[in-house]
Image 1 (cartoon, rainbow, N blue to C red):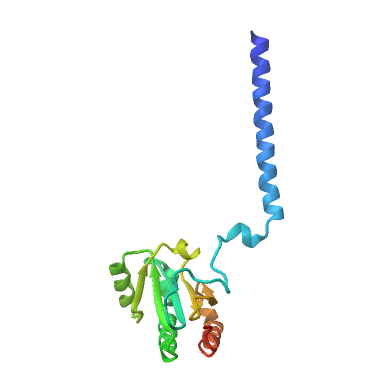
Image 2: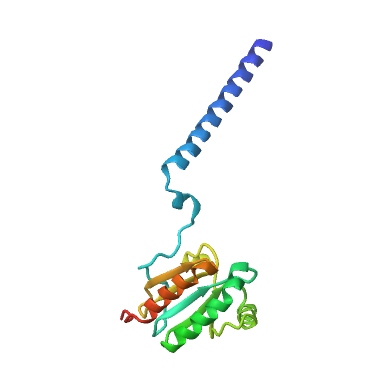
Length: 172
């Protein structure tokens, strides 16, 4: 009986060792042969894709924000200027937050962000992996540009991208 038990234990240990080697091999293969972007970033709405459910009659800036997001709060003064500049070009601004509409409207008002269209949606509905994210959307609902995240040192580049979007003819 002792020899049988020893054989069973040896087989179990071998099975565990083989399983560990297989799992380690899969992990190593994935790390070596998968692009870094695919490993670290969930899918996101890409430039050129249509935004599901777009019902605006004009171009728009769609702000995906979240209450409690420190980067969203930090970006508020820049976003305020972007919203005001967009309004001069008849470009609408829309905020999408996962919080209740009431909480979201208060959040925007507390940050002095003049956005009148506020939608309560799960951000994954639009393939938004993180906040803040801003999409530049044409009349047809096609994403023409985007900002992922916010860094104050990029404000000049972001302003240039916004101006390019505002000064191009919208798609029909």
